Length: 85
Image (cartoon, rainbow, N blue to C red; front, side, top):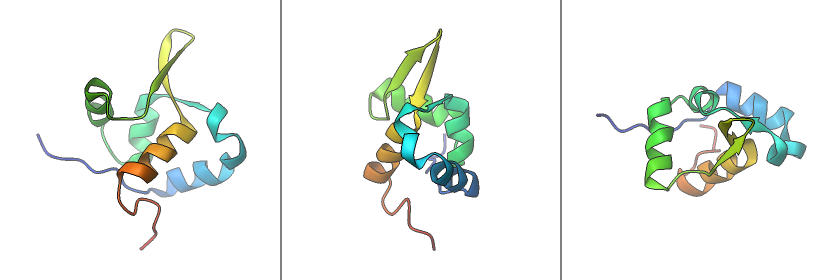
């Protein structure tokens, strides 16, 4: 298995800018988080199993991430994540 590192994508920038004021009330499906960060769903599942990723929230029968929690986790755990080269 190879190591993955989330990366800043244009889609994540767009979503982050568009939803900034209400980012803590936006539910995001784990597969969407994977697409937004250029990673696999297995990466986020492994973080969940280890207990080291952002928390999943059950809602309407599914587990979701809160967008603001994911953004905070990326900021705290991925060095220089929000820096644009």
